[in-house]
Length: 299
Image 1 (cartoon, one colour):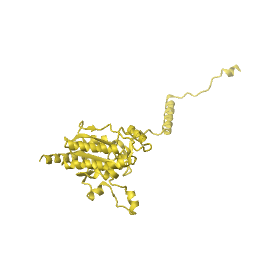
Image 2 (cartoon, rainbow, N blue to C red):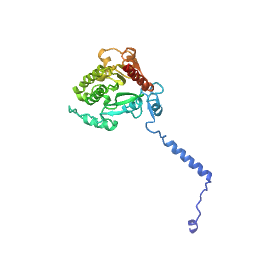
Image 3 (tube, helix red, strand yellow):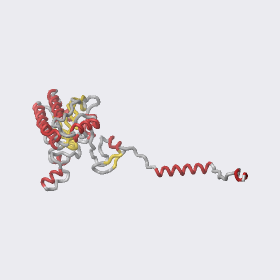
Image 4 (tube, rainbow, N blue to C red):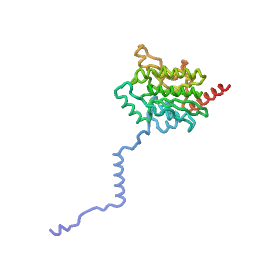
């Protein structure tokens, strides 16, 4: 009995080579079980060609798809940095914010949420800056804020920018990106159409230049007012430009619309747009127009 208690345990000695093989095998099993890690936001899907493209490549190409030239939406400050000379832009009326005058349900909550997510107080950024050394007033709409819809504050900021341009005897460039009038503000929103148009009329009477640059989308009350009043109307490739949407028109008239209807290229072909300008040529094109207008004014 005592002999059995002190009996040696049988075991197998593994060499160092066998231990390494076992460790490698375990690591392989672990790697099979775990999915490869891909950081969020590394890839982006193009809405036009449906290709999955590398986000960094798109960013390097001014937010334009390398495969099909689709122009992704960009925010107001990115647009401003793209066209103005570094350090020259001075923003106006940054603190103007919207009030729920008509007590529209949950309107304040939506505004507060958008202020946090976008860092904006409203759907337009206005100010003055230089483009290739040419001083100009600039207004840039931002579709991230309630689809760039025009309410009382958007109308007020654009009107004030136009009036300052008139007083300072400067040209103005407005980049449009809007779903139209803001339904939460009712008649107050619709009034901005006449308000902005009247200010542009005085700017025009003073012999000053207004360049309208249409981006995707430019629709509704914005199209029916200041967007189409430019002395020179430029557009971004593929931009949707119109009053009512194409589906609404098709349902109303009961007919199929022509291919590309309401796109920038269609409007250029039919004389509603003067030129389609790519983002890589945008700053130089605007700079040349401003310079020519300045020289003509001197003469």
